[in-house]
Length: 475
Image 1 (tube, rainbow, N blue to C red):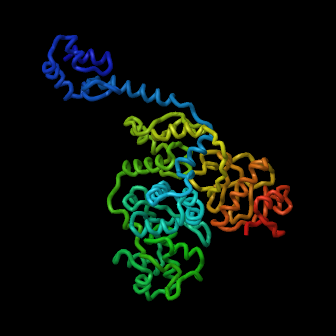
Image 2 (cartoon, rainbow, N blue to C red):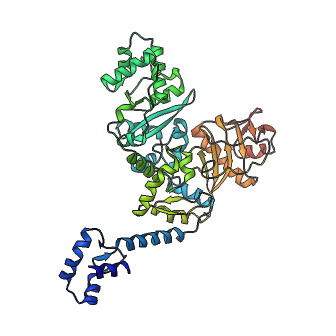
């Protein structure tokens, strides 16, 4: 065995026929010689070389060196792409190039947003429609009612909107986090939690019946507080939409502003104890599926527990297993970048500039929109212009791979990043078109100056805006 093991340490994978020719031994004798070292892990048997001929043998350390060199070669194989290619890649990877999609494709694209805290309004008026999902509210309600998806509140955006996280029910305890209960809960709040703990999922009328000693308004507010804190959820989203439209939108004959659907405790989704390794692996696979290319800036933008350093060991293990590739794939994204194998070719293909540029209106917080997170905002053209922010209710228009403009919350102000009138007109027309579904805009400020007295006023009107003397509107 010593001679055979010495030979194995000095060369790569080999077949028994080579040993037989070298030492003049038959196959059964060679197998007998190798059986003990194989059992001890001092030599490995399998298929190691691409296009290899039959069963091969290899020293473990030699095989590790081959793997390391192969991975290093793969890392150097692709020159890093420029930021514009990254913008195009993200749009393609997340399905922004589709005008419509099937139910299965819609589910895939919704799941691509799993675990991400998003404004409900942004989700339904901007993010899902941008992926070709028509009537997103119906899709979400159907998936929640069937039990495939569950939503968890993440705090209020304003009086009419809140952030939610969408989770597949069978992965909620891997990706979700359970906030601690309130230290000094109100009596109405205790009543709701106790009723749901005892009875399980309940309609609001059942919560009202169980807590009749409390005022309806107190129960209503307590339930909403539990929603915002991520303590309770519902098997539909229409209850949140009605709350956003105001109490006057409540159907006749119902109690409270949160009727409809069954309420349940989020803690009921956490059935089994999950190890830290399971949770980290779930986060890694979720982020890889969302971005295709995972970088420290993407992890930082999602406020992932443990940060990039916490995910790194799992990513290295996945690289060793051939599940991901590590390299410098995109400029400006740091040294440690991991990509799914299929994403590398699509990233490389995104270098090609399309013959016809397309203008897209996106929610600023859309993960397919890299500006303000993966990429810096373009330079401001005016000192009076406000700095753009990546926050709920704001929008951008991207022309091919360039961010042309940013729209602030409530559509009151706009910041222009491009002086080219053709580019601006395409972007403004796209913004007008998008406002028909997402709500009218009333632009009062352009680059920090009055919109109706701007040098761009005529171009806005030419692109579809109307001058109402106080603002430029899309009404």
